[in-house]
Length: 227
Length: 50
Image 1 (cartoon, rainbow over the protein chains, first blue to last red):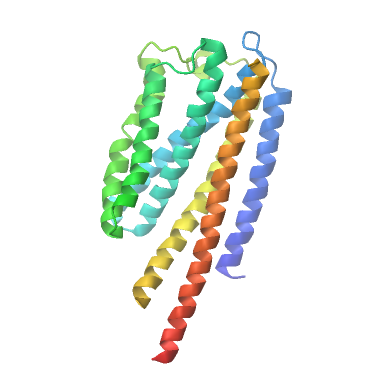
Image 2 (cartoon, rainbow over the protein chains, first blue to last red; image 1 turned 180 degrees about the horizontal axis):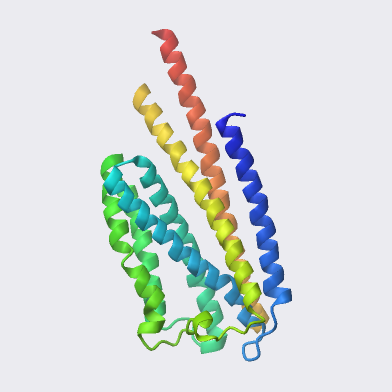
């Protein structure tokens, strides 16, 4: 079996696993988890909103690590990984920034408020959108990788601020439920299944996006040989 | 909008974003693979001419 065929077979298996995990997550979030007393069914947004936020931060952490590794090793593969993770982080954070206000409107009676958690999350999203835009403005691949690696490392400074904002400052955003015991034990299995499902999705998407970037690199190399 | 309406909107947004992103990866991948094939053929034909 060639490498490409092996890779495609692995992708198919992982894709099926993601599908099964997502169906399980939906089952747990809508049918297994009990109805929350105050918010009712609206609280079920939490089961996909929080894992999206966790995957967003994880993606930016991978971007940070890969950017640092690129600066040390100067290997293009680290830049490919950094870009893949940065783009995926923006996708997950977009989900967070859309589902958050949808939940907030009926609960807080406003779509948005400039609380530390919300503001730092929006800044984080904007920083990584800027990271992706910067890449389109630098034509030279070597310089582009270098500039974006430095930017990726600096942008990550905001991620711990997002994570700890609800611990450091008074915030309207719900406190970390697992730490404060705010999440009832009956709701925990659904939450863990959803996090696991999002983690498989994250791995699948990172892998696909990484190979896409490798193919782009291959195109650049072939073009250099021909023209 | 009812609470169920908000719940439906949130989950719809999630699935739409994920579906669009997966589709964009798939279509970019397809385009690049055909570009790689085209360039490989071009390279082969250049080698043959030489």
